[in-house]
View 1: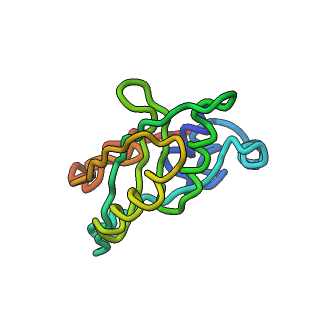
View 2: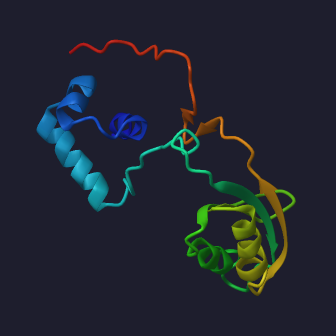
Length: 159
């Protein structure tokens, strides 16, 4: 049920009863579907999006372009799986274009990011080159506008 998943993706804090009203379905059915989605790993995780800058936490985020040599029979997957195991890695994508992987990492300082690239990422067999781009400001993350000053204009849903 795509509509339920879209509602949960926008706001996972809504109760099954609230979702049932929005989707015009019985609450027990909604609760059962949510459990089924969790059991089948369709819903992987619920996430809270925090404006860390506003919370006074000063992290450094970098997007690193990585060129790698694909390995026989596994292509890019073996190196990608190794990279995604590092706790600093917040996102990892296989890309088309001039590089193969896009790696997003967070660290407490520029030094942390530099250390990650020089000691962990660039030393992996098959990594040919890296280009590090530091993120200067977040405007939108996971579909949420950061520091949105406009009032929310939601439609009222009635049963």
